Image (cartoon, rainbow, N blue to C red; front, side, top):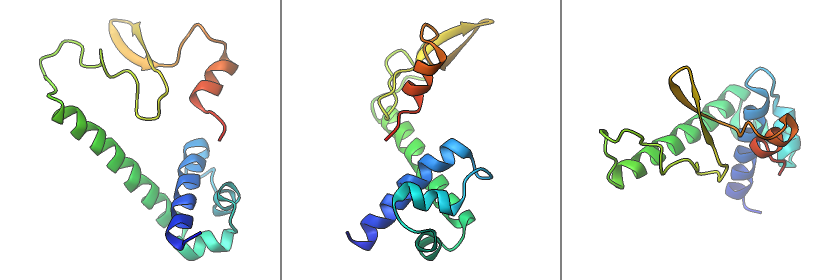
Length: 126
C-alpha cells in the first residue's frame, strides 16, 4: 500500500473516530487502531492530534462546500418553499426524515424505529 493510500486510510478512520467520540474523546491511539496502523505512525504522518483533527475538519468542510455547489449548479431556486423536497438523501446514502415540531421542520432519524435500530441506521459499523 502506498504512503498516500495509507494516509487516506488514516484520515477516513480519524473521521469516523472523531465523529464518534469528538475531539476530547478520541486519541491518536484509537485512530491508529481504527486504521490498522500504529499510534506512532499516525503521529509521524500528522504531527499532533490537533493537526489530524484540522485535516479531518478541512476535508469535511470541503465535502459540505461541494454539496452546496452541486445544489447550486443544479439550479437551486431560493424561492422554493421546500428546498429539501428532493434532497432528503445525503451523500452517505442514509435516509433522513422530516419532522414537524412547533411549526419548524427538522431532519432527523425515523421515529417509528426503536432506538437500537435508529443507532444502527445512523452509525453503521464498517
